[in-house]
Amino acid sequence: MAMESQVDFLVMGAGVAGLRAAVELARHGDVLVVTKESLGESNTHYAQGGIAVAMEGDEDVALHFEDTVNAGDGIVYRPAAEALVSEGPVRVAELIEWGTSFDSEGGELLRTREGAHSLPRILHANGDATGAEISRSLVAFAQVHKRVRFAEWTTVTGLVVAEGRVVGADLLGRDNRLERVSARAMLVAAGGAGQVYSDTTNPGVATGDGIALAALAGAELADMEFYQFHPTALSLPGVPRFLLSEALRGEGAYLRNDHGERFMERYHPLLELAPRDVVARAITREGIGERPGEMRVVHLDMRHIKGIDLHHRFPGISAFLAKYGLDLVRDLIPVRPAAHYLMGGIRTDLTGRTNLAGLYAAGEAACTGVHGANRLASNSLLEGLVFGARAALSMLADDLPITVAHPPKSVPIPLSPLEEQTLEEQIAKLQAAMWAYAGLLRQESTIHLGFASQEACAEGLARLVKQGKGSRRLSEARAMIHVAHAILHSALARTESRGAHFRNDYPQHDDKRFLKHSIFGREEQVVFEEW
Ligand code: SIN
Image 1 (cartoon, rainbow, N blue to C red):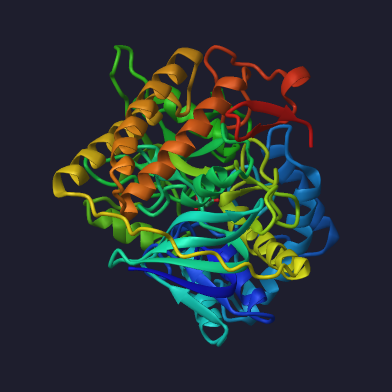
Image 2: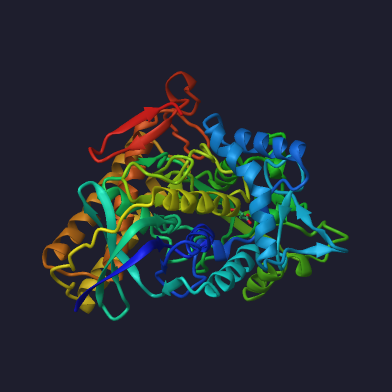
């Protein structure tokens, strides 16, 4: 049965950005936070290494700004980076006050280093479980607010637009119950879309739903060609691409090719701590064999490290590796890159506003330009805090009235087991095609192959939609198809290489034409704008 209800503020996503916003919004109205699985199942939860923050005053902040801008390869939107690094310390201090426990010794916060950081400034929790600790403490803090409600196991299947303004959304529960919720303002903080690729560090929920729904409602997307591939995911056949934190290299891990040679000196003076895009491409190149299809194994090596108890410093990683008979102290660990973080997303200004009234975005789902073409390691949790709070403040300031939306006319018909299986096969083909054709190294011909696969998947989906079918998975498939479409268009249009976007057919920067951000709008055209 279709239902209808109302709330002041609707928040899609329960990661760091959504929760931080919810806490702010709850001071002034009722908030409903919608999440596809149980609370805590988000990209935030899986963040290992830490949160980058400059807690030592102005000079420290200025260096963090410089590192962020340098990693972004020419197109970081400087006012966004300025906001991130200067407001970061206040937001982190607030988090500590609310119950987040970062690792410390003798009352001093411990800090580690990661790629492209000029000094150790990364706070961590429980060794390598920083995201889980931030998520735990923010959920607990939000739960004591009487005005915050959570809808777990609930999928947003569409945004409701009336007279050019987003006035609510359709929510599909686990029992296939459809509810239309009217809201004064809606925040998309539903994270990234790593699941568009077959190889990803992201959990299954990261299907780009918020980005796709916003775009389908008329929001502009920006910088969608910039997908960050984390250099070191575990590479074992049949095993998920488990993240092996950059903090391992921050604590001194080497990368070795299959001759046992440390190879990073051929790619960057910062060696293993070069920017993430450089390290990921270097591993890919070292991993390509001489014969077509041949792959060589690249390893992470910590066997030389003395004076650190690696099992204590990295308990989560050690426990995961132990399941496969691997030990950081004793073994070479096989690694390869995997899709990790989308620098692009729903275009917003610095206050989380999109081009659609009533719709706001923050965190990985949004694109403020803060990361440019390549995000600095451990800047993403900070982004969620800073821009989650900013978006909430503008939702409050805009003070939009509620417009009650009519309940949806029909409820979706569940898919048959055969239809579900076919849908899964089509999704898997799309993910494999995106990895092969629009991954770390792309070129015009492969991008066109990506389009062919994306269109085939879209046709299969359209047949089901026409029959009135609907489910969480169908909604996710639609989102992945839409996000893939935007990535492919944007990657085709940027005929240069920059940051995470590398074109084999245009391997150089083209600063004259492309020191700009790409905008993917409703007409499916990509335009480039200087910010
Ligand atoms: C990591 O621990 O390497 C991931 C941190 C990040 O994505 O910035």
